[in-house]
Image: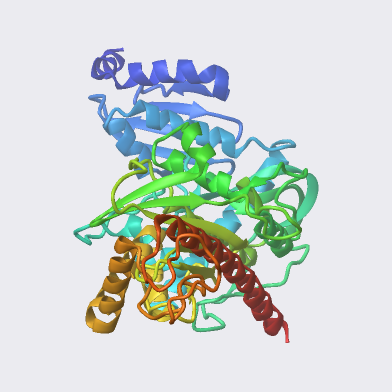
Length: 549
C-alpha cells in the first residue's frame, strides 16, 4: 500500500488510470497492477503493454508484446511517459488496437499480423540492400530508393515509407541550408494490412532469398509464392498516404495494373485534376478554405525583382474534349513486396507533377494593376505535361514553354517561339533550372533574367527594343516601310489598304489606325498561341508513337 501511495504521489499511475478510463470504451482495453504494485499491464486479446516502475514509483521500462511473442522494450513509449506526454501515449494505444481491426477470429488475425511482419522484414531488407549497393545518403534514399526511406514500426506507429520531397522542403530559401525533412513536408505512407471483401494470397514468411542483389541498384531476388510461405486471407497490404494525394485517372489505372488490384473498390467520383492539386496545396499552406482563389484560378507569386500572376487553365480539353480528370487517393492495395518499388515510382511521378503545378498556388495577393506584373497561363497537355505561355520579354509576342515530367527525376523542357522572335534562352537552360528547383515561378523568373542578360549582351536587340518603344510612344511605323503587317503607308507615301487616318505622303499614323493595328497584333498573337498549342500536342503524340516503334 505504501508503494502504491508513493507511486500515486508521482502522478504517473494516477494519470495512466485516468487515461485508461477514457480509453476503455473506445479501445476495449483492460488493465491491472501486479501484486508488487510495480507493474501496470494494459491488455487486449491480441497484445499487451507492460509499464515497469521501481519501488520509488519512477518509470523503468515500457514493453509491448504481440500475441504469442515475448515482450519487447519500446523506447518511444518510454520517452512519452517520461515526458508525461499522455496524449501521444494514447495515440500509440489506438494504433495498436487499430492494427488488429481485422475480420475473423484471433487465429485469423494472428496470420494477418504474421503477413504484415514478414512484409516489414522484406521492405527493411530492400532499403538496406539499396543503400549498400548505391551508397545513397538520406535524401537519395527518399527520392530514388526502391522503398524510399523506411522508419520501423514502433509501438502503435506503423512502418513509414518516405518516397518524395521537393527541393523547397530540403533546402531553406535564401540560405540554402538543409532542412529537417519529416512526414509533414514529404510524401510518405504507412504500411499496414486490412480486411477486404476479396481473398488474396499473402506471404506469412519473408520472401527475399540471400543478401546479394541481382543488379547495381540493390534489387533483391524473391522466392516463389507457394502454399508453404503464403496463405489465402480476406485481407490485403495497403500503402496508406499520410494525407490525401491527387492522382490523374491514368495514374490510378497504372497502379491498379501494377498490382492487379483496383485502387478503388467502386468507381471513384472524378474531378478536374488541377482543382484537386490547388485544394491540396492550399490545405498544406494552412488555408482550409479559399473558395474565391480556387474559383478564379488566379494566383500570384512575389519574387525578388518580379511580380507574377498565374492563370491555371485546368479546364482546357486534353483528350476527347474533356479536361484532365483525377481523384484523391488515400490508400493503395498490394500483395507482394516486389510491387512496392513500381508503386513508389508512380507515386513519385505524380508527386513531381503536382509539385510543379502546386508551385504556382500561393496565398500571396498582388494588385492586378501593379506596375510590371507579369502574366502567365499554365495549361495541361497530357497527364504528364503542360505548357506555360507568356509574353516574349523583347518582342511582346506570345511564347510557350512545354514541360514534360518524364519521371520524378527528369523534366524535359522545350521553348516554342516565333521564327523572328529574339532568343530568350536554351531548352537545356530551362531544363536545368526546373529540375533543380521544381518551381514554375522560379523557372519563369530565371528565363526572364536570362533574356535580359542576352539582350544586354546583344546591342542589336537593345537597339531594336528601343526603336520599337519609340515607335509605339510616337505612333510611328518604320520609315519607308509598307507599314505593320502591310497595313500602312507604302514607300511612296500612298495608302494601299485605304485605312482611315493614314495620310498620303506622310509617315504619321493617327491614333485610330494605331488602335486598329494593335487589335490586329493581338488577334495574330492569339492565333499564334493556339497554333503553338496545336503543334505541342502533335509533337508529344509523335514522341509517344516513336517510343512504340
